[in-house]
Amino acid sequence: MKRKPSAPPRHAGAATKNDVTTKIQMQMAIALREYNAGNMAEAERYCLQILFLDAHYSDALYLLGMAAFNTKRYQIAERMIRHAIAINGRQAYYHSNLGNTLLALGQNEAAIACFRRALQVDPARFEACFNLGNVLLADKKYDEAEALYKQTLAINPGYADALINLGTVYRQQNRLDEAIDCFRQALKISPDNPNFCCNLGDALHLRGDLDEAIRWYMRTVQLKPDHPKALNCLCNVHFDLGNLPEAVAWCNRALAQRPDYGEALMNRSILQLLQGDFLNGWRNYEVRWSVFSPRVFTHPLWQGQPLNGARILLYGEQGMGDSVQFLRYVPLVQAAGGRVLLDLPAGLRRLAAQIPGIDPQVGVGEPLPPFDFRCPLLSLPLACGTTLETIPARVPYLAPPQEALAKAASIGWPAEGLRVGIVWAGNPTHPKNRIRNVPLDLLASLFDLEGVHFYSLQIGEAAADLVARKTKVTNLAPMIEDMADTAALMKFLDLVISVDTSMAHLAGALGRPLWVLLPKVPDWRWLLDREDCPWYPSACLVRQTVQNNWGPVIERVRAGLIEMAARKQAMIAQMRSSQTQAAPQPVQLST
Image (tube, rainbow, N blue to C red; front, top):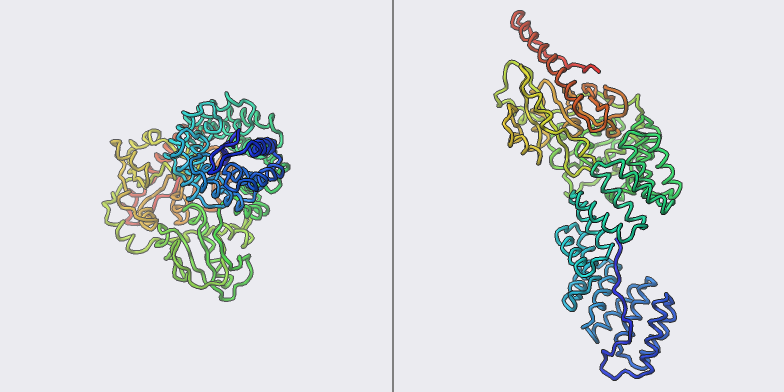
């Protein structure tokens, strides 16, 4: 994040205990001229001559510190500026640039104190205000950062960097309209800044204005053809539009400019996995550790070799759904001779405890017992050499505990009619959540179907949407404390209908009949142009044909539910007449 250094004095300050001679004033003026011209060695030489004449001349000590700062000798810079402050603590720019120096040394809390002190000395010191906002933005203290950037702009309305960072605060809070307005204002001040153009493209992309986002990314590339971030963003937006050849081409251009660019390498792997190229995709997907923050271990990474009874730690790394999907590999690791120790989020531990033969689990952040090898869950396909044809797809591979089943059985489930669980929204922090979610109002057109009982498995903020509406849907959220509870409830349902969330993975892992509602360009694990799912044999994938158009998807679901409900009713009638038991079969939806 860009920091704004406080400007050095343009004249020789006289804040010393001794009178400043004309010679010192002249030498200070020359030192400032050399400093502003970027001649740090010359500036230092003149400052040292001044300090030989007057060891307490604070501006010379300060400028000596800034010369050291600009040549990345931060410890010397800190020492010199602190010495200047000890002599004359009434200069706000001393405190502000000491804060910048401490930031460079990784001492963020001390830096914050310096910026606050600078503002106490001079509330109009906009650089200190801006830099303090930057530290708080990095710490995700968005309300405080917003106030500071607004204060900066009140002092200096034409400061484009403050507009950009204020827009970044808004973007982090999903206040996209306000972010876009800030970025547009910054571009009025600096219309040819490629980074500003790219920021505007990012916000437009997040808001779903894909065509305009492309225009601003292209503007960035026109201004700076070797801008790897803009090239990679063009890959992202074409991916979201379903233009996969263009996405691949832009990804390759980004990597041509910067071969070690983690985000572009990650995109390449996702494009490969989406298209079923697992041979290259799994190997390249390991680059995710240059994008995500990896857990640090000294234990060797398991790469598929025989374990001969060694204990191996398998641990979650991304979302809950990812963990559910790749727990299928536990039996394969056991077959390789491993004693499996699981490190999973608390919400998944009780369900995962039912997997046969695992060592005691630990929760995230708890002390780990001794182990010999480790492997993150999403690296298991690479270690096991998984191809599209060899996905370990035997289901169920998870089962709810008996106490959860007993709790779920206490619900007054209807004896007749189709029992359907619904999930319409995923994790609100997911970057693709906007295109994955189905508006509840659209699903409401299903709730009047005769012979169908709907049960909401939705948790989190979106569950409140159901409470606010008067529907016939039974809200199961009060029954759910963790994934084990949800799994038990699914056992009493004839069908689960879900958007791309952990609930879809859970239903598939349990082998429950499942319809997954997918955007036109889905997450890589759902692949392309198929209605079956090699990961989950009981799943039917219901895809958009036009981006963001859920209408035809809901119509297909409605027709399928009518058919499935009729089948169950016929089976119940047959059961009554023949005294035999049968279960409804899931309907494969017509195209």
